[in-house]
Every structure is written in structure tokens, then in C-alpha cells.
Image (cartoon, rainbow, N blue to C red; front, side):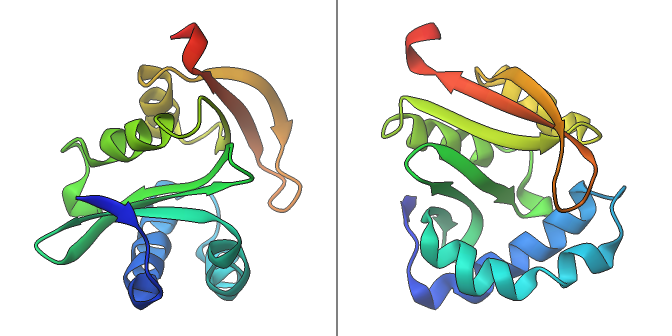
Length: 145
């Protein structure tokens, strides 16, 4: 079931975020992410619209959208990946947001493949201003699907 996140789910979401982001971004030192934990929890999540995917009372994934168009986070528990949860979350957002963008690190090939498979195209390449690593800005437009 997909629904808007509730404050009582923040610890589950942050647990998914920290574990999954460290694994997915193996090329960036772990401390980079642990130093950003509180910013994500206290500033980013409250400022975004976040939807969770829950089964049997357990949060298995989430997606966060800023400014009605920018996907700032899409993470699924590692044990639940490749089961369609990420696609379901993305499709759910597509029903609300006909145009979306996101930033994905160029070294995160599985994520780039996932987004490409789901209708996103690379719009530009740039250096991430915080980490300095190369990232792609990817774009989705429902009218071009």
C-alpha cells in the first residue's frame, strides 16, 4: 500500500535512507552520509512530500518530492529491491506530477538504468556541489512517454 508518510514513520524511513544510500553510493565515503543524517531528518523530509510503501505494517520503501517536481529520494529496503516497489512508488508519483526531475550520481549505474527504464532521460551532467562527484540530472515528462 502506498500512502503519504506520517511522522511516526520517520525512524523507519531514516533507517532505510541511511543503509540504502551508503550501499548504493559505495564510491562516496560513509561519513559523508552519516554527517547528513540530521539534515535529511530535520530539514529535507519535513520540506518534501513523502510517500511510503508499506506491507504488513512495515515500511519497505519511500519516495520524496520537493517543489512538486524534484525527486530528492527514492529508496527501497535492500531485501525488498527488484520486487517492483520502486516502480510502484515512481508510478504513483507520476499520477500527481506529470513532469519530474532528479539527480543521480553517474557512478550509480543501477539507479540510472532503473530511471531510464521508467521513462527518464539524461538532461545534463554536472558536479554535485556538496560531494563534488559527477551526477546526471534526469527528466521525465508524461507527454513524451
